[in-house]
Image 1 (cartoon, rainbow, N blue to C red):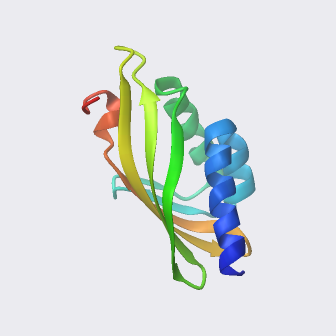
Image 2 (image 1 turned 90 degrees about the vertical axis):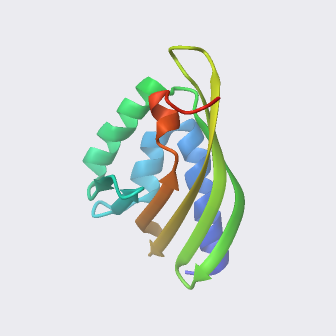
Length: 128
C-alpha cells in the first residue's frame, strides 16, 4: 500500500477510536492481529481486543485521542505520536497522556501495533 493509504488508515483508526472503538477493531485490524501496549498487554485476536476496549470504555467513556505527528518509518510502517484525554470517573478530573504507536500495515489493515503510553493515567494514579 502507498504511504498515503497508510496515513489515511491511521487517521481513520483514530476517528473510529474516538467514535466507535468496536468498528475500529473490526475495520482496521485483521483477525490475527498483534498488539503490544508498553510490553505489559499483548493481544493476538479481535475478540479479546473487543473485551479489553469494553473494559476501558467503562473506565473512560469520554476518552479522545488525537494524532500530533505521523512519520512513515518504512514502506508499510507508520509511527504516530499523539495525546489522549479522558475524565476520571471517580474524581471528575481531566487526565491527559502522550502516546506513541508503531503500526505495520498489510493489505490495508494494522497487523502489528506497538503502543506506548503512561498507563497510570488510566488507573487514576496519573497526574491531571
